[in-house]
Every structure is written in structure tokens, then in C-alpha cells.
Image (tube, rainbow, N blue to C red):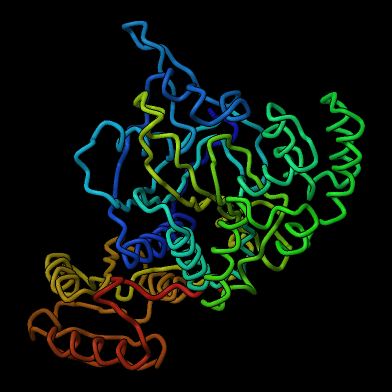
Length: 444
């Protein structure tokens, strides 16, 4: 018996860290006033495979199934199309509408570090705002999340409309633009020579290919340099880039949010700004998140190309984030208190644990019956600070024997005195037991 390749079960300390990361994401999502959503995992295959959805590369990785009624269905491969479906099916939703969703998605693709077949995505999207302020707010949100996770990032961004204008200026045929964009997007992986080799294989005109060679020399160049070289400063896409860049500058985000003239991302539905998040130290190559603007999908899904639903979103890759954090030392959330019976006092132990939990302290009971020495060693190794022992004498007196494992001292106190002492201690050292019900996580 074994797991399907690219799928994992999570438990113990690893699951505790995953939940803490998810809680951090959710806390920031709600801080930015995004509402939670749960969309369907199963969808009609026609929806997931529509030309307005993920594109050929994603469709190759989609899990397709047939139900007992011989209906063709698919498992969601991202959270974007299900979100677009919800908006399309509920025209009464007041716009602008901001939502977040944390849920599993499925892709039958190659498995590598940070890339699984069954994985968790954490998305935020806003529909109903056409201006660059929506993109910038998502950039701010991303910066805040990784600041809290203590992961230094670089957020690369570009605009597909602008890149299309660049390609048009060097006579790339309209029906080849998207294909060329996706090839240019691989420059970091395959280098200039690899990009040219792939473009030649597409059968592009030699003059166009030579023009793209010149364009590749502008890798890492600023927006101003690229737009001036090709004389497109006044084109709509260039103006969008300029507007977004001005806001980024005014907010002081330029050191983190950096323009990349070749970024386009793999999904075909992006219509404007796109962005991707990377580890700034360069030690982890996979993307930590990405997204962009997709103004056309919702209207197209309901067969109304004339209706615009300006939409922009960003997705955070939980598995990539966890792959980055797995090698870092971390203090995982664990119980703050363990209550141990000495003799036949299990009922009193359960009563005491209930009172401690009601006061907001994450509490463990150890009723295993093993030797006290082993129970104390386990508490110490798990970072549990307080051990409460209840023997027959303590039960008769209505008292508790409290051992402070950090201070190496022992006191006999009432339950209320224990609660007051622990509350005072955790406040003085910065614990927030009422909010987290556990010791705080430290990601170094």
C-alpha cells in the first residue's frame, strides 16, 4: 500500500506548520477585506476545457472522469476558473467583489520539489476594478504575507498587452504572438539560445527571429528602455505599465516589485498585468506564487463578449512555500500545558484540562499510565512549559502541583491561581494564547 505519486498525507509537526502558514495567509486575506469562498472541486469538462480557460498546457494535465450518468467531468486544476464560474452564475453579486479561497487542486503533471499532483492553492481575486490600484493592492498583500513568513521575495511583473505591442512592432504575426510570449517566458530556464531554438522550430520568418534576438538583449532592462526602443510609449499597454509603475514607485515597492519585459506566465487567459513571486535569495527556483489580470473570462463563459468583468488575482503555492520552509528550523505550535494524573485522579485531570482550555490555553492530557519521568521528558522535548500533576493529596486539597519546566520550579496552587500565573507569564513574554491557543511559531 502506497500513496499515488505526487500526493502526500500531512500530520504531526508538518501539518502543524502547514496550518500555521495557512492561518497567516487567511489572516492577511481578511485584513485586506477579502471574503472566503469554497468552490466546487468537480466541474463540467466543457467548462474546464473551454478555450477561455487554462490553455493547452494545463489541459494536458487535467484529470478527466466520467460519472455513472456518463457525464464528462473534470477535477479543478486551479481556483480561477471555478471562481469565474461562480461570478458568471450569480449576476446579483455586488461589484467590486473580493474573495479568497484555500483549497486543493489537481494536475497530472511532472512531479518535482514544490510541484505535486494534488496540492493546495491559496487564491485572492477581485472583480469589478479596472484600474491598476487592484493590481497594486494584491502586490501589497503578497509583500505583507511573505514579510510575516520571513521569506525575502522578488515579485516580477509585466503586462501582456505591452508585450504584445512590442511583438507587433517587430512584425510577429498576430496568430503567433501568444506562442512567442510563452517561449520568451522560458528565458530564465533555457537562456537566449534555447529561446531562439524554440522560435526557429515554430517556423517564424528569419527576419522576425533576428528581431527577437535583438529584443532578448534587453532582458532585465527597464520599461522605459524597451518602450523607447520600439516607439510604443503611447500605446494602451505601455500606458498601463507606466501607470502601475508610478504607483509602485510612490508606495516604495520598487526594490521588491521589479519589471520583467519577458514575463507572461503560461495561462492563456491573462489580458494585462501578470506577476510571479520568487525567493529573493535564489536558493529556491520554483515560483512561490503568481497571477494577473483576466478581464475577458467571465463574460466569455456566459457567451457575452460585450460585457466586461475586470478581474485580477494572485495565487500562493502552499507546496512551494512549504518546500522552502522545510529545511528551516521552526518552533512548531504545541501544547502550553500538560496535565498528568498521579494515581486514580483521571476525572480531576479532565476537569482541570477543561478549565484551562476554557481560559484559552492549549492543553494536553497524559493519561498513558507510563512512568512520570518519561512523561516529563516528553513534555520537555516538545517544548511544553507547564506540567500540572494531580495526585490524591492534591485532589483532596483542591490544589494543583504546577511544574514550570523553563524556570525549574514547582508550586502548589489553586486552578484560578494557575490560570492567573500562566496568563501573566505568557503576556510578559509576548505569547498570545487567546488568539492562537498555542505557543507562537518562529520561522527563521
